[in-house]
Length: 80
Length: 233
Image (cartoon, chains in turn orange, red):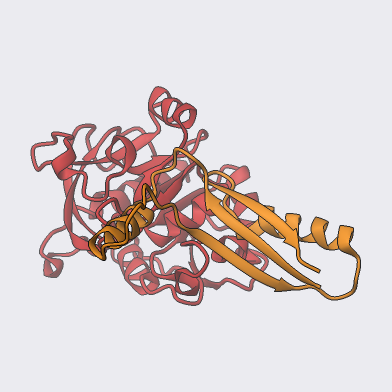
């Protein structure tokens, strides 16, 4: 099974990297960009076919390591 | 006085730290590899030094914070043992839950490598007894992620309990945004935990301890620690 964990900064947390990317997009002439927040994507291969088990394991992975829940939210998707 | 300096892959300030400890105390610190599961018996001070553990992959300090030795460090701190966490060590201590908050990318997005001025906010900790409250010291910083943030309740608690130990300031001790190099909330450069036995700070006092370095303002931190252990003995 393939899974994806997406980690994003919580709203209200200052994101200087997102701001810099936003500025770069403007200077490239990309129109209509109101704001940019950057984050991380983890594509993970899961052994076996236990979907619920995989979701639980990935949630644990996100809580223990992939995200710092003081500043970040995460989303787990088992793609199949 | 037994010192243990932790060593993770990618750490590069451990020898500067060992040299400073040796110079001020006359004792040779033990260098402890991250895969160890125990600290040497009788350890008085654990130092988590600066550098770029695991290449700053994932988040600064995130992977080192989950290394086997860190369980022993958490247990040591829970019993009141002193932990000094510098630069990447501060990031590791936050990620390990030894200190609150997070060190984010510097507000200006630039790696900062220069001397800064710190106002010592209190002198009644084992780490700062070698200084006077309000004293300004000059020490180097070298970091890209030193911008301290925490939620409003945590900041209020740190301030209310007097747990901000060092603040970025002008040479006259004025805290003002022009001297807050990395944009840290409340110009926070260093904090202690609630019990007062874990100090995390971004600047490098170990790099200003002898005349050849051009400044010895960092020496007070180590001299204070040595006094603390002598009094305790």
